[in-house]
Structure formats: C-alpha cells, structure tokens
Length: 138
Image (tube, rainbow, N blue to C red):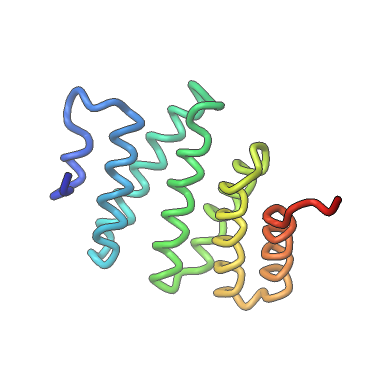
C-alpha cells in the first residue's frame, strides 16, 4: 500500500499499532520533506507511548522503533545532539528484552555518538552489540 499522506495510516477504524506502523512508513519514505517526516515520527512516538503504557510487553518494541526512526532522521539532518535522547531511550527500552532489537538500538546509538565525536562511547556501544551477537563459547 502506498502512503500518500500520514492520514492514510490514521483513518477511522485503523488499529492503533497498525496506524503507528503506517506513520513510520510514511516518515521513512519521505525523509527529506522538511519537518513533515519529523512531525509524523513525533506523532508515532506519542501514540506508541500510550500503547506501551497500556500494554508494555506488547508495544514497547514499537515505541523503541519509533524512537530509533526519530534518531535516524535527526542524524541524517546533522542534528546529532537532538538524536541522542531518543537513541538512548531506545537502548534502555530494548535492554530488557535483549536480542536483535537491542543490537539495532546500540548500533543507532553508536552512530549518534560518532556524530557527536564521542568515539570511545560509540566503540563501547558497538562492543556491547558485538557481545550480544557473538555465540557463547562452549
């Protein structure tokens, strides 16, 4: 389904999580459209926060994806300082479940830290991600 506007995702009757996914798809498909993409991601974050509060186990990962999308969009706009809080929050949210979502969050955080010229912290984030993906020694 082609997203023509963020309203396509938020039509009456669209389930909340699906509407948020639609907002993220719209924002990532049009990342160069001025502030429109960031406004759309901000709406997705606000909506996913509500869902994550209502049903944390079910929607925390969705909130983390929204935060990562915001961090990536801000980083593409060379606004690394603004990208840091959402990237850090995404890491904290995914730390509880671990696995691939945490690895993705750590990689995003490392990219933001590199954008801020905080290379040792970026290396630490990447090292943590590597420890997660490396199979345990037997």
